[in-house]
Amino acid sequence: MSRKNEGLSTRIVKDYTIDAAVHFEDKFMISPFEMQIYMDVETDSVREQNVAIERMNYFLNYHIDSAIFVDSQLAETIAKYEAAGITVLELPEEPYDQIVGIILMLKCNAIMEERLIITDCVFGSKLSSGIKFDLTLEQVQENFTGKYWWNNHTVSTAMTTTSKKKDKIVKLFDADKWTELNLTWREKGAQKT
Image (cartoon, rainbow, N blue to C red):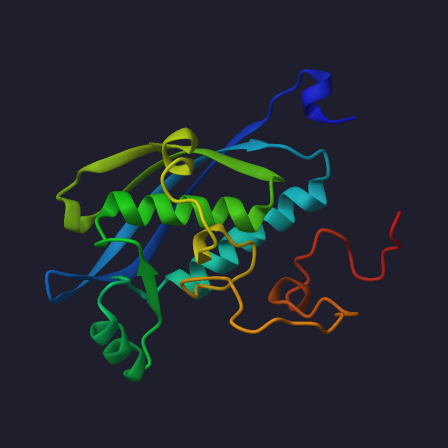
């Protein structure tokens, strides 16, 4: 029986500090970003709750930490950072704290696949002079829809998730990163029901 049916509501809070960079007004700037996220638990499975949190931990610590946020329109700048071996995270506009927070909130929700849902996020960085943005799910969902990395449940940070060639091969095994990390919703060896 789901929590919604029982009338129970579990809400949790988690804090993150991420060291990342932004390319803003032709400058490279490093800053710690602080996120305080509020989540509703949407599954009774403790394993799924833990997997959802671990997916978010992995993504923020291994794909966002030490990366740089850049406006997707700056193709030449992006190419230079990539040539230097820096992970570039393309954004739909300049990397103001509010935009970075919105994109991270959407991506974390996508990778947790509705097991946990971030409903609110307080987000800011040293670059904003102590100002933090109070973001809600309703705000962020209406403006950044589409097939972009922040709406994809994989660890991908490529700007679009559409394939340029049609894949007509039937995949027999799920070889994505979540499987490799044992962060799928079913335990290895568990039977489908």
